[in-house]
Every structure is written in structure tokens, then in C-alpha cells.
Length: 356
Ligand SMILES: NC(=O)c1ccc[n+]([C@@H]2O[C@H](COP(=O)([O-])OP(=O)(O)OC[C@H]3O[C@@H](n4cnc5c(N)ncnc54)[C@H](O)[C@@H]3O)[C@@H](O)[C@H]2O)c1
Ligand SMILES: O=P(O)(O)OC[C@H](O)CO
Image (cartoon, rainbow, N blue to C red; front, top):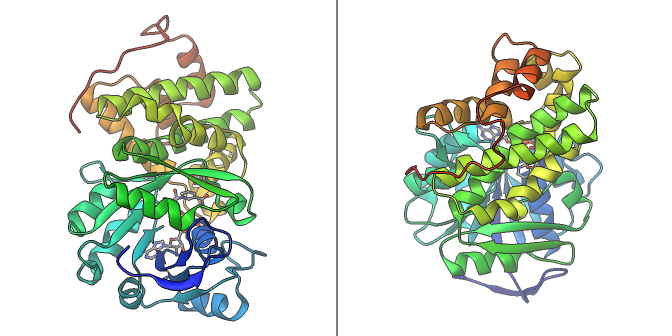
């Protein structure tokens, strides 16, 4: 770490407190700011909405995204991005993928050489199928970049429920620093060098959470849920490994771990969108009722296009796309998936490697 101060952490694993920034005042930014604040760090918590910043300053609660949760510790809400970045040794970014590049790009000159910047975002950029670490690499190439991903429902972290996550970065100092800053009695941080796999897994699992929500709404049963999750894992790992991810990543927290939590929890926004559609809502109705981001609905389109482009078999992606964006009925898609001839008798299709 370039700078330290001498105050003591309250619950975390390192002795020193640090100045950090969290960009994005939604559910996950708030949950991470809370962990960092409780660990004794000074958190420059940037959000675009001045009313929200004033509310957090005055009440210590982010009522829109995390009602009833008190933000203790030295959390300083701000709408001044330049000062948040300037004061931080490490920056965590929790901006939805659709706005990610524009927010970083507007402030690229304010990041310092060697500053650690960690993406918390589980989405893909439409142009060029780029992950957020790739966007960071393009926008702020002299920063040291990592991604954090795993089975991490914001509300449970905020409730201090036991949680594990994964920091992925090529630079061992980045991995250690994040483990040190975030790790505490209820939040355990594992390290991985497979940045692409960890990050892509976090984006892909959102698609299968929508499928699982749909299946739940239609009361398809527990066998069906197990089938969908397992075939979802096969499909997402085949896709990611073909693009260069490490298959072992999909056996870990950022892969199957995150798939399990989002496919089984009604706290997942992606699951809730699928559930609402399964109950007869249109996609637009489901999204507007949610009022928060469900990255999977954008990721779905991009992955379908990419999979078709590189020739990777992803029947669940194709089926969900036909339901959400095409004209197929849910029952017709289910029937065609269950009766599919292509590859239907092969449980494992070995991925072939394609450069991403
Ligand atoms: N909530 C979770 O449990 C969770 C867990 C892990 C990762 N994530 C990921 O974190 C990312 C953010 O999700 P979230 O849960 O915080 O979403 P959210 O819907 O709760 O909040 C989104 C936040 O982004 C802000 N925002 C949107 N567009 C913006 C712009 N142009 N400029 C500035 N701010 C903007 C909104 O004002 C809001 O504060 C997503 O990619 C999500 O997949 C979420
Ligand atoms: O609420 P979701 O569906 O965005 O999922 C949140 C996290 O990604 C779970 O790990």
C-alpha cells in the first residue's frame, strides 16, 4: 500500500486503516462501503445523487437501496468524484455495466499511476464483448486492476451473514491488499489469478438465475431446478473455457458458488425478474417493478450473439432469449429443450479454445 495511517481496524484482519473509495451508491456499493467502514477504513463513498449523499450523511442510512441498515464507521458520502479518487489508496467500482465506462472515462485523468482499482460489477459491455476489467485496462491502463466476485448477496453481507468472495488479479500485491482490507469475521476473501474466468462467471450466472426464477414461478420442481443449474454450469463453463477461462474457476465460489446463490434465492434481482416473467409479467414490467439493476437481461443478448458467432452450443441461453426477446412461448421452449436431438445424449462437451 502506498500510504497508511495509524488508526486501528475494528473487525478486519489488518492492523492499519486506509483511505478507500467506493464508486456507486446502489445495493452493492453500500454493502462494500459498510464492510470497509466496519473494518476501520475511511470510505469516500461516491454517488451521483446529492439527495442520497445528504441522506446518508445525516441519517447513516441509504434508504432506497438498503433500508434499515445503519452505516457505521467513517463512511463519507460524496458527489465529488475527483476528491473521492484523489483521497483513496484503492478504489472499488460498483457501477452497473451500462454506465461503467462513461463514469470511469469522465474521470480517467484523476486516477493515479499504480492506484489499485477493483471492479465489483458483474456485466459485459456491448461493444466488443468487454468485461469491466478490460474497460478499466483501456481507460486507466496505468492503474493496477482486479475484480471481486462470488456468491455475494448485498443484503446478507450488510446483515453480517457469513460470506466468502474471490479477489482476482494478476498482481499478488493487489490480491493481498484486497484480502487485507475487506476480510473480517464474517467476510472471507479468497484469491484467484484467473481474472477473466472469475469475472465472466459473475456475469454469466445472472442468465441462469433468470431461468431458475422462471422455473420457480412455474413450479417446475426440485429435479428441474437441479437440472437447470447443472446444465447451466456446463453451458457457462464451456463458453468461458472456450474463451480462455480456467475450468477450475467454475468449481469455485465465483463459478458454481455464485450460480447456486443466484439460482436459489429470491433476494437475487435476476431470479426475481425471471420469476415475474414466469408469473405472466412482460420483461419491461418485471424490470420496472424491480427498480434495481438485473445485469442478466443485457448479458443474455450479448452471450447469445457471441456464442453463435464462435459456434458454442448454449441451449439455455438460446431458449431464454426466445422467451424474453422472441415470440416463443415458455412451454414451446421447454418442449424443444427437453426433446432436443443435438448433443442430447452427451453430458460433457469438451470446450475448444478460441481467443477472446
Ligand atoms: N447487489 C448485489 O447483491 C450485488 C452483488 C455483487 C455484485 N453486484 C454487481 O454490482 C453492480 C452494481 O449493482 P448494485 O446491486 O449496486 O445495483 P443497484 O441497482 O442496487 O444500484 C445501482 C447504482 O448505480 C448507480 N448508477 C446507475 N447509473 C449510473 C451512472 N450513469 N452514474 C453513476 N451512478 C449510476 C445508481 O444510481 C445506483 O446507485 C452490478 O453489476 C451487480 O451485478 C451486485
Ligand atoms: O441480485 P443479483 O441477481 O444481481 O445477484 C447479486 C449477486 O451477484 C449475487 O452474488
